[in-house]
Length: 174
Image 1 (spheres, rainbow, N blue to C red):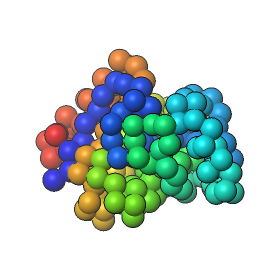
Image 2 (image 1 turned 180 degrees about the vertical axis):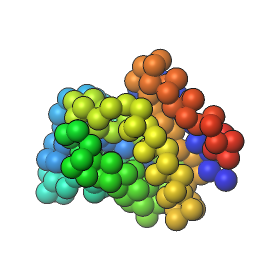
Image 3 (image 1 turned 135 degrees about the horizontal axis):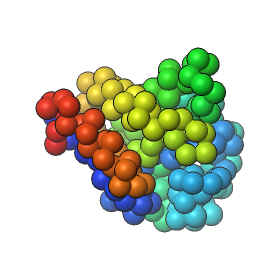
Image 4 (image 1 turned 90 degrees about the vertical axis):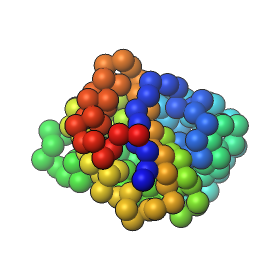
C-alpha cells in the first residue's frame, strides 16, 4: 500500500525520488514554487527545460533534479482559476494524474507534490486539495511502483487542510 502524508516543508529540500513543479507553460521558471525549484536546482534545469519546448496545461514533463536532493523534477502546468466553469477541476486532476504517470515511467518510488495552482493561479485551496488527494488515490492503482506520496504544504493552515482531508479516509493514512 502506498503511504500518503502531508508535511510542511520547502519542497526543494525533500529527499524523495521526484518533486513536482507547479510550472508555467514555458517551463523556464517563474515565481513561487517554480522559481524556488529553478533557483535550487541551478541553471542546468533551465537549460534542460528549454529542450522540452514548453508544456500544455494538465500535461507533465520530466527533467533531472540537478542540484536538488530529488533525482527528478516532474513539471506540470496547472489551470488558472476562472471561476470553476472552464474545465479547471478536470485540468487540475490531469496535472496530478499525468505527473504520477510520468514519474512511474521513470521508476520513481517516492514523490512530493506542492499545492498546484493555488498560488498565483488563484485556485481555491480546499477544492484544490480535495482534487489532489482524490486524483492521487484514484491513479495510484495504475502506477504500482510509487510507494510514497508527500503533499508538501507551505503553511500551517495548508497543512491542517491536508491532514484533515487525509484522516477522513482510514485507507489513506500512512
